[in-house]
Length: 604
Image (cartoon, rainbow, N blue to C red; front, side, top):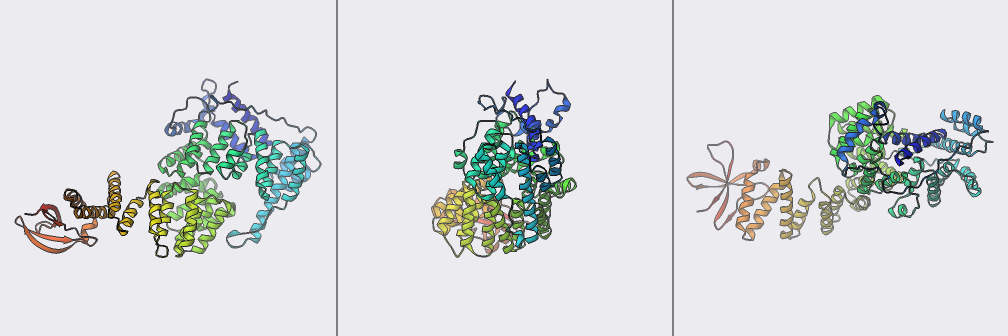
């Protein structure tokens, strides 16, 4: 049997076992990967591969290196035996309890299994008690919530569950599913180190439970912790590493792993969505948009991850596409947190910020820990100039995930609006620590250093340099570096950065006030250093500029040159008349013409 066929058979068995233990999200994930495995056309009919057709173009378009082999080629993977079911005597009780569980009657399900000793029954009973405690905690949060949903409610079942599960572990009577639940309980109680050890045991003995991997991922908050854990070399480990790299903001490493996994799971919608997430973090919006369009064509009722797609459409100001997406998710499932965030983004793009906040609040009623909704709601409060509410929303976001750089950045912006630059600087520093390759964060911190209260121009220069090295897409850093150096009397450095900014604007075929500013400075600088030929080049280019700059020019003198009546002009922003030994820059207005004719002329 080939290793690809082994993956397929393992997933089929795992889906049945996960569903049997009511771990439905893990079963759904496994089923998506099962269908995502490349099919052999010689063995399968077209009806078996129709779900995979839509993903093929994504695989071709975004794979950097064509992967002709499967992910298992050349790698020695551990063969994990599939566990056998142990329920025989108490299977009837288990079926009744599972029926109650599926109807969300968790305590009733636990009561049915109170005398059952099989591992499967013990897991479902403890899991039902855990979820009953979570359900009650959510109810208390609604009943006792403070400002912006803050509450001290806790799961009251954790203490008794920890006591029982620790006894089972000491006795050696735990299976991988009970280990997963024990790790979940320990994590909720704050025992992160022990939780990490228990979850590693769980995934090493049963690697197909994606829920267990996700809980372990949440405990790997640094690359050192990730490298310290001892995981068996099963193919599921590659999925875990790719996802964890992404959470640790190692986006290029994550992309490499996902492309490697495409060798076998080339039609997995999950993989395509994760690749889009990594590209989104790298701000490759064009590619992200194409991937999500393909995903929607292949899976038109998909809601998961679509809020990220809405963020891309928002950033690109695609009104019609965002409107269509909002309508689509509204008709598919309007009471999903993702749907509410998409609709909130739609109203935000229309400038209806109050209505946008309504939908972000609705998302949080559906899921109090939905990070994106807290952050986006904070952005809306900033737009509404309600900085206290924005700060509260951002703080809730960082409480949920301290590694969310957007929330730290939002806090910095809020305190900057309140003219508190020292606080703003503190939060901007946190954001750039978490996302050091985002030029926007460095620019924000530089602008904070430039404020009157701080006026730390040297530090601002350092930040702008980092921004310029991080692909400053907004083209702010180079111009600001030039201005700061000029303000500090370093004209050579200022000329260097103005020239770099000018070269970039030419490469991007972009014009604007920055181009005029750079040309005027460089012409003046060259003239002051007797480089008249260079000055002439910059002056001539300035005269070729057709923007609104000339609209503010005022006549300052007249003269007769070559038989023509000439007006000398001076611009509001800076002088545009240069005189030096053998040349004069003339802004000439022909009285017989409606427009302004600009020429460069040599003096007699």
